[in-house]
Length: 317
Image (cartoon, rainbow, N blue to C red):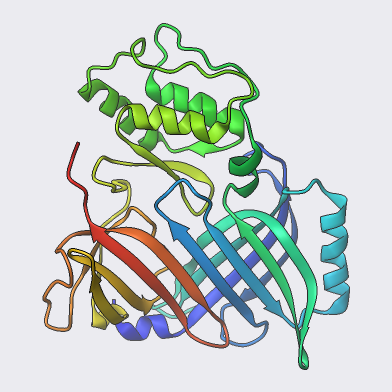
């Protein structure tokens, strides 16, 4: 993949209403697309981390027609708080060319603040501030008792908690939980905590994953994922960044970590393995890193870049 491929970037923003816990069921309210570099101006700032804290984003749509802004405002007034979702997808290349890449979701989550029309000189902007799991992680408690019974594995317990909170959990996370429990000699009847109605959902997940030495995160689409004991998501491929593939600036931080700026790679996720190399192929920082934080910043009227902080894999427990 060459540097030139990432110079023509695209963006899609979708606003929909969804029912908590009804996976995949939603009603489209409005969508904006810019896949040619012309037309609607979309600007964004998104932060993803490798912790269980919420991923957050801000999207601005410039000069939205007043009637559309009123339609959006009416939609927000008509639904339960937290049940409007904003999804930002980014891509590269022009439609119909070999370099075209279908826009990938960078962040999808509940809108916690909506500003229909913000004026700045002659322009207006419609602003959505949103994040993955903001409402659920801040406010949700377990609605049901989750008891340790014969045959209930750590993976199943996490599935029960996730379902109770209205989240999905990846099968890879379930499998990793069970593998980690087996390595530690923990059977489904040993060491599994009992959760009661009213317990904070975040605490329940922390205790299940922490008991077997793992960490959970929410990905950019509100799915619970697992980091292994080295802090890595093994369900994602290794990505190599070089100046030829969009690496712009870099510096080392702490011991063998890196802080880099590059043309945005929409699929990059916290926990993903990353190799960074200079123009001669020499590794920057450790030869193999894990992404801790990604910030996507850009607009269809400007550049689309990312800042990445990555550090060496943790030693295995």
